[in-house]
Image 1 (spheres, rainbow, N blue to C red):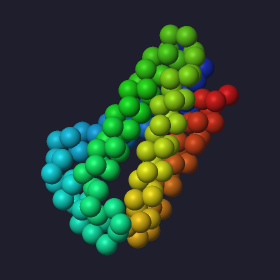
Image 2 (tube, helix red, strand yellow):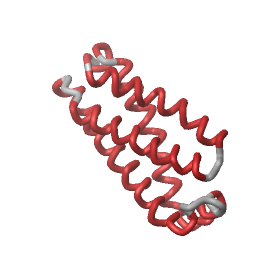
Image 3 (cartoon, rainbow, N blue to C red):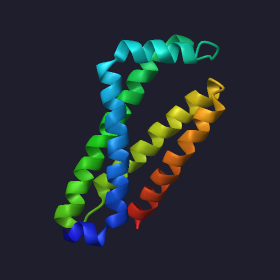
Length: 132
């Protein structure tokens, strides 16, 4: 358990983000049509309304790759205390959150955009810790 005692904040942030994105991936993949319908309705007055399935697929892929890299990163921290993969995964998570923020702002869902700030702050803290 050396890695947990040497890097507790990094591991907890990685677990938090991995769980968050894995649940999101699971929801999108098990109810793709429902998600597309919901998001099309959410974006009906935005310039993104005709691109929802494509953009949702991009978000899904970035979430999947962020989870993969964060998982590999946790293993890498455990085995060698190196942080490169974890940093890449958390950085990809930050990009994903920025994609979601752009969408929320274009849809004029300001409370939804504001709620992403909490995840983004945690993600930035992860980038900071993994970069040192």
